[in-house]
Image 1 (spheres, rainbow, N blue to C red):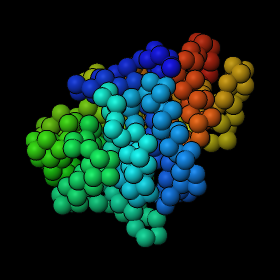
Image 2 (cartoon, rainbow, N blue to C red):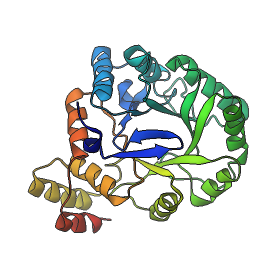
Image 3 (tube, rainbow, N blue to C red):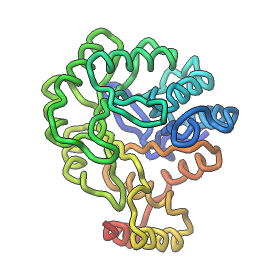
Image 4 (cartoon, helix red, strand yellow):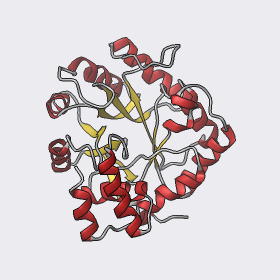
Length: 287
């Protein structure tokens, strides 16, 4: 079994301790995160290996599939290990064409939390992230109504902790006047660093920062620079990009996703990769 130190160490989400190397379950659904997977047995095997390696942080959502990913998680892992932390997202849904329309009214958010609980076979969600903003960037505006709805569900015992996704610093500050926030999940990687200030704010406040799309938004020139560093180190570009994130800030948690056990092992190996100073300098210059 992989040791916790080989998973990047741990970080606290409120009263929960999670491995910094987590697992994102989005790719367990079918193409474009819609419908069933091509190989359900492999999806189940991936999840079981995730837990066997010591990872105790799984990121999911009922709108992956929809419902498919959560149903596979339940089939593979229920009854869940005592230390397993399952984090979900609400604020969107899937339409018949596979689109991602917003679902942010109080009634939609309440229903989404209940649906996640049902499909995962849980009585309380460990963390529920409120997904705001667009596909890859926040949209300014108040999120008070939505956070208040999740806070009510928290008071009812259905949610343990509240997180946010695709938000800006003002929205984080507004949410914190309503309820404690334990994590922020935004787009951030070597090439897309618009969130540097929010990363600093969350680190100072003891809030986890969970970047998505670790290889999204690269230009060919930037990809070439990453490839050159990876080749020199004898590593894959994904491993180097993940290792850079872990070394960037101690509050960063990773949730790389895959539907393959082989790729899972490659991702986990990135947590043990210590990038030398010259490589870090080259990577820092990419953006």
